[in-house]
Image 1 (spheres, helix red, strand yellow):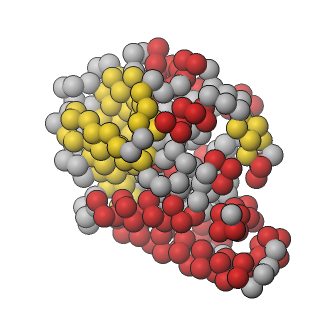
Image 2: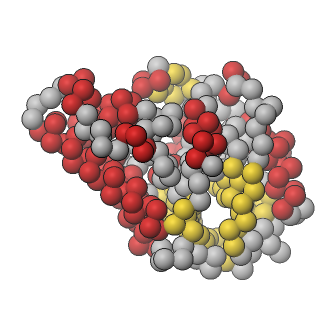
Length: 294
């Protein structure tokens, strides 16, 4: 299973138009209480089904929309009423236009709409991301928190302090006891700290502990990337990040430059375990340094 996620991460954040998505299959995982996780290429999708209609979290890349809609229809033939974007990256928002055409009301933090409305540059990849179409933009935006009383559950959409980006939300299904982390959790991999979009390693760690404060031993946690997890798994990942942060901060305090700090191997003890995704050890260390230095 980990090899599958590694393959998916290798195409993460690349130009969707240059990718061949024809071989991508959408996998469906039933978690509990009518809540599902869909795995394809890009960010993991959350789906809640029930008498009220379909509530969806993220929608991967645009070329996968037909497959995603088919996978959702296999779960439930109702209408997609709401779609929440956990942040603005295209592997989580690429299907917005198609979902909107199906009648979904698109919702996100106000910074998501703002960033989707303009070109974005990611220096770590030397990549310019063009602005999204008007039809792809969130219709409803919020600043702090929203609550949905939907499908016999209470679903909290919680904006966290700048973490993966400056527009991240985590979602808590209180009755189902499920948390969707967006890209504030890369299960089994180093995270992408999008410093150019307001990302911050301290915020990623803080968001993780905010989620743990809502969780218990039975909580299932949907990561932005990687396999379904739980509170213990998230805690192990956060422990790694705290050690990596402390090691890098020590190098910064010694006056090392970015390249010198990368060469010093602040994360060498973890690279074999967490460095196999698209965010390789060098890039993770570079962003970690930048996050702690700004």
